Structure formats: structure tokens, C-alpha cells
Image 1 (cartoon, rainbow, N blue to C red):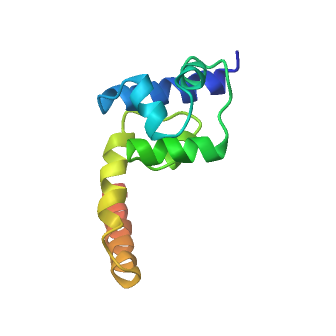
Image 2 (cartoon, helix red, strand yellow; image 1 turned 135 degrees about the horizontal axis):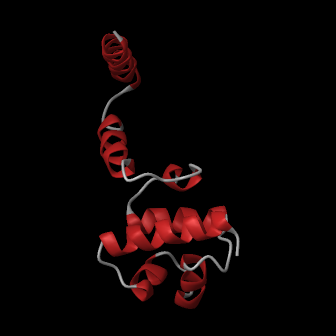
Length: 109
């Protein structure tokens, strides 16, 4: 079994359980077979980008958490910030970026 597939599958299962879905419920919401979802969760099968997108939509998460080499426990914190940032327009986001950059510079000392 591929270690990357295991990591992706584990993360999918964690997100599914965190949201209280059974495997069957999530598979239905993501328009896939529950046996296939099981195979993905245990790392036996690869998942296509299309099916991953369906899963992310069903779980109400962004796909980037699966692209990272190792999803971290901190991802939930990042996800909250990403959802908040989506509420701002382009000009506001540039100001927020500048604020964050300034905070980082202060932190560095």
C-alpha cells in the first residue's frame, strides 16, 4: 500500500467522522459507492481529483488540505481563517495580507 494513499484515506475518514457522517452517508453525498470510499479510506485505492472534489464539497472543506504532504492538526485552524478570508474583496484582502506580513515581521523581532 502506498503511504500517500494511506495518509489521504486517514484524513478523509477523520473529516467524515468529525462531521458525524457514516461512510454510506458521505458516499451518497459525494456521488460514489460506499465500498469504494472504504477502499480509499484504508489506502487500498487512489482517488481521482474529481471524486476528491465531490468529497470536499460534501464535507464542506477545501481540497488544499489533501494536497499538502502531511495534513496537520492545525489545518482546522487554517480552514477557519480561509473561510473568513473568502468574505473579503480583493482590495480588502491586500490590506489583510499587509497586516499579516507586518505581524510576522514584529514576531521575527
